[in-house]
Length: 97
Image 1 (cartoon, rainbow, N blue to C red):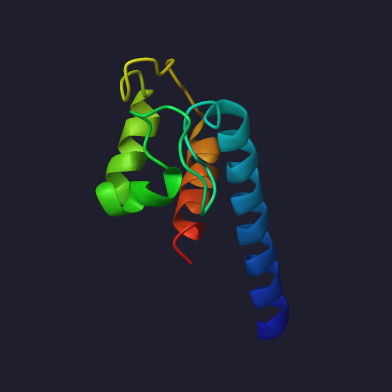
Image 2 (image 1 turned 120 degrees about the vertical axis):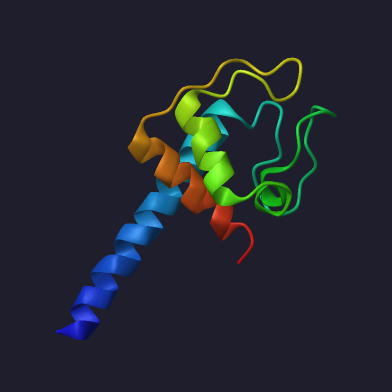
């Protein structure tokens, strides 16, 4: 039974990461590098793989929850639901794995 529970949790985590990846590809990839290797197309937009090194994850969570309206000068306002925020943070965290 413990194996089944572990598989469900891993699958849910993978789904959350996949949702986060889809969200950042749709909303952020125009300026930010959202993968493990590429460079950001906007010079003021840090690659997502560096965000958890630059900011504590809980600070990112708070920024997403408040609606990021500043970052780099050309950044549009970004508002996400709590579930989307968790998915985005899961994806950002996965980039360090």
